[in-house]
Amino acid sequence: MTDSQANTAASGTNTANTNRNSFANWQPTAGMTKITTLEMHTGGEPLRIVTSGFPHLKGDTILAKRQDCLANHDDLRKALMFEPRGHADMYGALIVEPERPDSDFGVLFLHNEGYSTMCGHAIIALSKAAVEAGVIEACEGTNHLRIDAPAGLIQSRVELVEGQVQHVEFDNVPSYLDKAQQRVEVEGIGEVVFDLAWGGAFYAYVDADSIDLNLGTDNANQIIDWGKRIKAAVMATTDITHPFEADLSFLYGVIFTSLTQVIHPGSHSRNVCVFAEGELDRSPTGTGVSGRAAIHHAKGELALGQSIQIESILGSPFIVTAIEACQFGPHSAIIPRVSGSANVVGQHSFYLDPADPLNTGFIFR
Ligand SMILES: O=C(O)[C@H]1NCC[C@@H]1O
Image 1: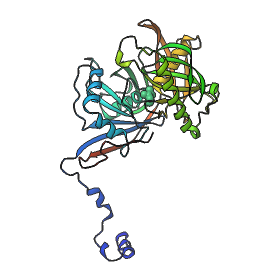
Image 2: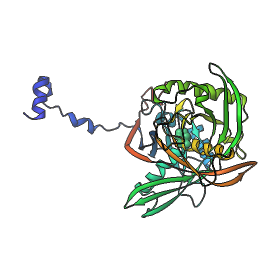
Image 3: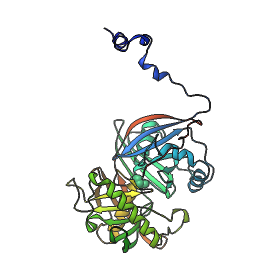
Image 4: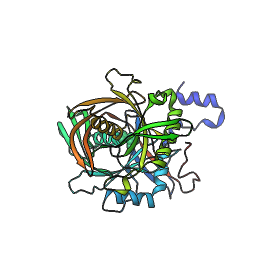
């Protein structure tokens, strides 16, 4: 008996003309907006790259385009990040025209609360995809990319061996320790000691062992809850000022670190980042490991040229190297170099139906 005969026999009379594959013939109705994406992850952290369907953004700089997106197209960010198309921990990248004449492209980073200033896991995924998709003309050996992010110019390199991507790394913006060993009282936790550092975004770094916080996957809810509480307390008590840009002067998240809770013998430590509206980074956080390198360098624990491997809540690794020292406004800074790996998981065609009451989505967090 064929599949279709079996189907007819099992389901009774009106199924003679049933074609179970005809769902694939569905076509959008007039008025629907179509947005296509390439779906990737870097060390487990999702990246939804918008490939078509997003309106052109106005502004000569990436920060101006970021403002335009927030003011005029924020519903599209929500539609792509929130359920039912995304989820509370979704992350996205929107490719825009660069602001520097010799850059390959510009990028805005999207998350559950708004638009971040820089994103290392996204840069790793975008660099790999740019080579594989032909965004730049790639060759065997080292391919160089220049990407304009809100926080500044990011230079990445993609190593191709026999047509396969073998290694991706990027040099971040100058990163520095802003305030060391600050103390804050946090409701439900008690006194928390943190370092404030900039690595393309501002984070409060808290030693998880000092507050008895388990950084395992089985404790994700408590990590998110404590991350949100500490973020609120730090924001209420701490001056956060980028040396050049008011638009970059905000606390993005809290990074819990641990030298003891590591699963790979090669790992120096673990980073678990809670950012935006309680998003939990599955990767070790590219901007976060940049801030870590700056902190360790400032404390005399990481020399120039020295690398450490930092693992995520999943154990996925990034390697960060302090490659050179520089001055960033009033701050002694370093340039961090970060490497990690990313994979493609799919491609989507999303539709927004004006008749859908949940068009712009929802999240539970
Ligand atoms: O890798 C990073 O830098 C990012 N991952 C999610 C939060 C940060 O933007």
